Image 1 (cartoon, rainbow, N blue to C red):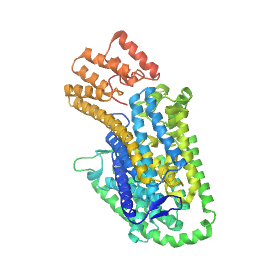
Image 2 (image 1 turned 135 degrees about the vertical axis):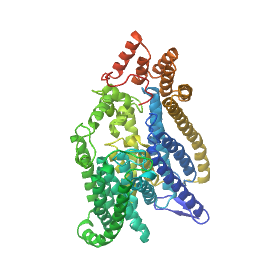
Image 3 (image 1 turned 180 degrees about the vertical axis):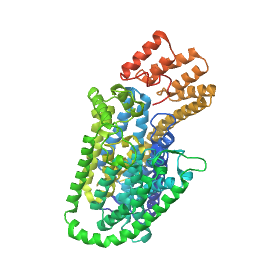
Image 4 (image 1 turned 135 degrees about the horizontal axis):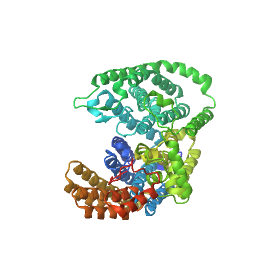
Length: 640
């Protein structure tokens, strides 16, 4: 027997209903666990530089794990996708294909390959979203709640790293909280993403669920405050507006948020004023600031308890306020308030100064851009040079070196920290057009389905997109995957005509997915294995075992034919082994593999003398006119 949903999709009931429901839950659980692990492993942010922690492993898991779940999800998707869904997802796939094609003209083809792997992970997440939208009864709410659970785990671990430093804190812990994902702004975004699902959970009839939801909101606000992230605060304000005005049970949501704001004040003040939390600390084997961590833990526990109690008391007041003020024209006010938040973010960006920003509470009210305005200028200039095709995926490190006006290593950037300018400079108008088609198709789906119906997923997508206008969000798979999954859930829910032969279509889709998934796995594994060999080569060199370093670096260069990192490390190892001829030969091979890389020419300049060295330095100045040889060390630096 079949039953038809309001959106026109038919699903079986009776014998086939329970297995399908169980499998969909398994897929959701796999996606949640996978995302948490990716966040914990540096967010999958493999920036192409050895020694960056767990980012390479995180990206490998993001690509392989997401593509596997996506392939399985395709097999359980009932019905036929609508034209709008095919348009949106097709544009997303074309975006990945265009990124891969740009390897042909990118100055750093290995970084273009890396960027393509990131977008492949996002595409896989989008496919998961589409498939689950066709299986689940209420995919929007399920998506938001699952994301809240995943983000809540990260929030709890981040707080625990400060409460029990000997257990979860890294060896070198910066003052700004950045547990797992490695970037404070990105961790703040993860905390913000917990709010829609937590708001939905407040409507549960089970008291324990409501208590957990209020605790999640309180913990998220505390983590955002401890990251000292200005983009996190902007995203928080926008998310609160969307959640409080579009989600059901508005009084209960507003009460929980207000209670959380009040409750986090004591632990935030303690953390901001205690030297153990405001200075960079290298943890001893027994740990430092253990006593401070315990005090902070007591304050956090008190904040959670007080937020739960205070929220219950505020609900009565908020119900009356809602009836008197907020009940009428709620959607219009939501749109207006969300627009104000977005405009405010844009205004902040426009008035930003280029100066660097320090730490502490003062940075939250600073309008200094931390050099963002300069990176935006560089990306815009690069777009004007190559407006149609761009300079190639992952090319901004080269753009930065060619456009910068001063050689300041601390401000060397690998991303312009702005989505539109980043896509424009790297993938040109073609990349922008494909991204616009994805967003336009999603917008059409929202219009057809209704803003309130899509609010849980839509709020996540909007906040990630706004956050990406002020940060390197799009380059972090943990963030871009969430945005793609949110778009996929919305697109997958568009009305469509039921398929006449679902089992046959499942076989066809599964057969088509096999080579695609295989290609993604090969791409991710090959890149990761090359990076691992380079890392091991560097570690051997640091220990003085230059023979092993040379051999590992040679294998890395063979494993990844697009990268020069293995060649640069091999050249360095041969130099340390007093093989001058071999070192010069390998350095020349690096400039031949990537003739537009100042790093390759820097290595070649370090291993030559006379006219050859002057020619190498001339190439460095051509590729990076502001290169200051008294500041930037000329040598075989094996990464960005």
